[in-house]
Every structure is written in C-alpha cells, then in structure tokens.
Picture 1 (cartoon, one colour):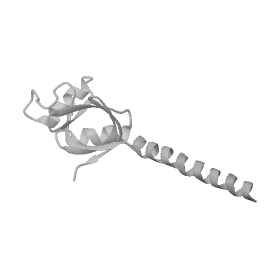
Picture 2: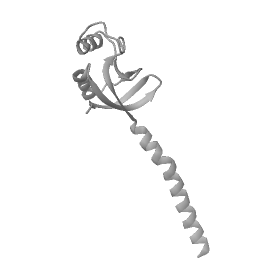
Picture 3: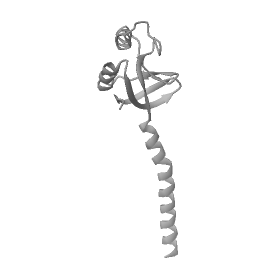
Picture 4: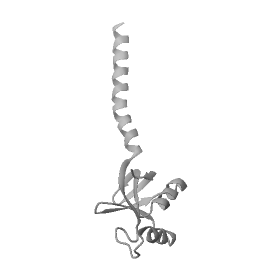
Length: 116
C-alpha cells in the first residue's frame, strides 16, 4: 500500500511540474499585442507622400513590407496570411493592433485588427 501511495505521489508531482513548464510555453506561443500606426518598412514613421495611407500602399506594392510604428520604434511585420494582409491594407496610415512574436525589430504576425 505504501509503495502505491509513493508511486501516485510521484506521478502527481511529475504532472504538476510538467504543467508548470508546458503552460507558460503555450501562452508565450500566442504572442504579444502591439498597437501602433500601420506603415511600411521603407518609409517607417516618415513618409515621402503627404497621404500616409497611399504612401504605405504604394511602397508595399513596390515590394516593401508592412510595418507598425509604436512610439519611436518601427517593427517590420512578417506575414503571408491573406486576412492579416487585407486588414493591414485597410488600416494603412491608421492604428491597428497586431498580435505576434517579436524578435528584434520584426514581428511575426498571428493576427491584426483595427485599434479601438
């Protein structure tokens, strides 16, 4: 009986410790949320054209990536998701909330929505 209780206790301890390592990883994989102005990586925070939305769309059409200007920081946005790209197109020159994983100056995007 004592051996069975030890085994059960050890199994419970292992399960609790495993959950402690797995759950934070699952939440981290969802990413962080950033809110800022949708721009392009070529112009960043300063556009050549007076209409920021038109400038952003023109630069992206010429091959630049979308960017998000958050305060003084400009993040390049990495995504091939058509829904995210459509939302970025709509939000060009306006504020958006981007969820993703940041690495340096790049955010790998998991979702985009208009900022409230």
